Amino acid sequence: MHTDSYDEVINVPNEHPARIAVATQNILREEAGLCDVIDPLGGSWYVEELTDQMETKILDVMDVVENEGGMFRAVESGLVQRMIGESALNWQSRVDSGKQKIVGVNCYRAPKTEGEEAMPPTVRPVTEKMHAHVEQLRRFKRERNQTEVNHSLDKLRRAANSKDDNVFSRVVEATASGVTHGEVVSCLREELGFGHPLIVE
Image 1 (spheres, rainbow, N blue to C red):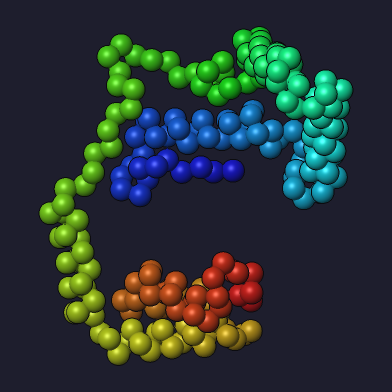
Image 2 (cartoon, rainbow, N blue to C red; image 1 turned 90 degrees about the horizontal axis):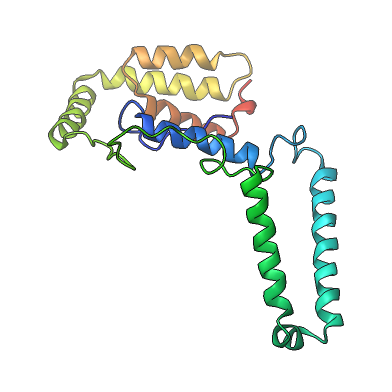
């Protein structure tokens, strides 16, 4: 599984955002337990087993409270507070011993260098340069052969609805005639829908 760093959209990833992305993967593995079984959501037995375990534990707690005389009596006698305290103590003991892994706390800790900022700021692109890129794209669209662009998009639409034509070759032809990536994607989405690439044959 791949997790992107939060600054990837505006520049080459910096070290701090890249560490967060890697830590996210480690959290999913160590804390969410996604690697405990193969394809955890592919077979419902695993989800059902976890649900059964949770239900059993919940019913056990409800029985303890009921035997105390109900929730009001349990709070009045201090039972609820004791149970919460014991649970918190047990959790902290598991974290301290390393049995319960917390990414960045008791495992996968990044070494700190002296004078390192807790969260270095992401350098945003210069506004003038962003406007210049947008204007460059507008100029490109104004100066291209619009007749060829329309013809290429028509061929791409026909290919998307054909079982014989090669969609990818039509994409290459379209880009060669000046069609942008966004226009190619928009065209295919209009013909094939969103998020269903397997219907392209």
